[in-house]
Image (cartoon, rainbow, N blue to C red; front, side):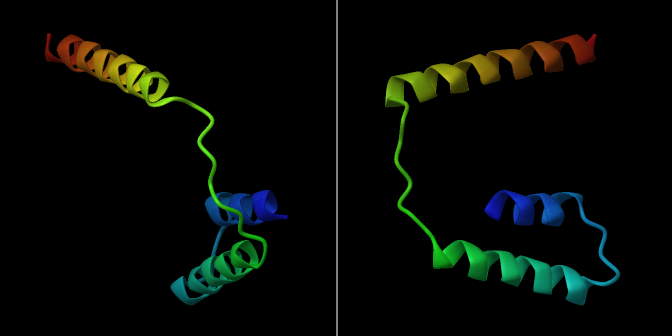
Length: 67
């Protein structure tokens, strides 16, 4: 159900800001009814390695666009 709610917020069309706010609040209420603590599945070293990879790729993109 949570995945469906997230998708409806991300992909939905809203007739007003009021409708969007209601959808977000409904999502938060739903999420909080069955919330569980977040459990890290990656080590800090694995996460930092991915960050470095992204930094390298962004630098390459910036450098290529500067040419």
